[in-house]
Image 1 (cartoon, one colour):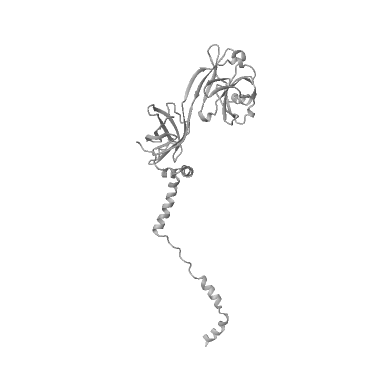
Image 2 (cartoon, one colour):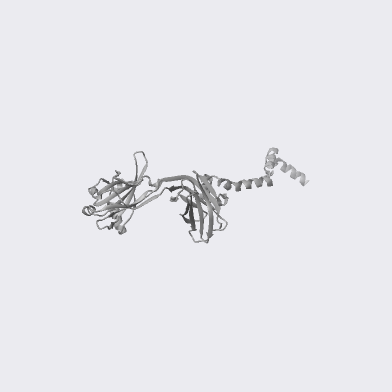
Length: 345
């Protein structure tokens, strides 16, 4: 009796069929994610692992990977003991690793390679740790036009070179046909240029840089460099060596200036050092030297060095100009890169 009465009382408040259907739909289980088959999973993993290896196969990919993960870049870089570009072959001959130092004998072979070959600081050691390195020419075979360099690198923290690694050595250019003409007398009479010369202030030379030479205190050097102007390029007055010319001479700011044009020094690294010799045969060094860059009419870069002497005109009248001159005739550009294990051979 009670159950019948309870049913009649609750029947009017039962949910509608539409509401029941909606509620039931929300309780259905979502479909379970599909698991990758073992073969598909293996392919995905292989692709992830292959990406760095593929990147290391191209120069751009290798450089990008090396910047963010040098250890990975070296791990995936394939061993390549020789490389040929611009008619020149670079190869590793022998390797020695001991403690914090790794050394490699690296050979260059080609028609533009000679006994004066200079890597011109265009080389790089690629390693997954901080290091310092240098290269020096140790042998040359004229019959095969082969120059051998001893390339040495050391860890900066003094820790041992990690075992089982690889080193990549790259080169962008080298110089040859280098000549040195030392202690040469310049065919010019300094006294002929004892007058005041046309000059420009340091502020006008937006590309000026300074380097010092001679004996004086730092404060004195700074004072001279701040006050002394530079000569306006002209000439050439004399050409003591191919690729090096005397562009201007004269007094400016009470000091005697001798200006040398080096051409584009970034191309062939032509450079020199000048001094005066007085009537007693005594060498008179420059008080300091300074330099700047400008452009020729055709837009080519021109580098100038200026040697400044604190010498009176009457003493200059009895002096001669001398110098050491270093030039190169050939620049060979290319993209050489070899990779080899860091293990004794």
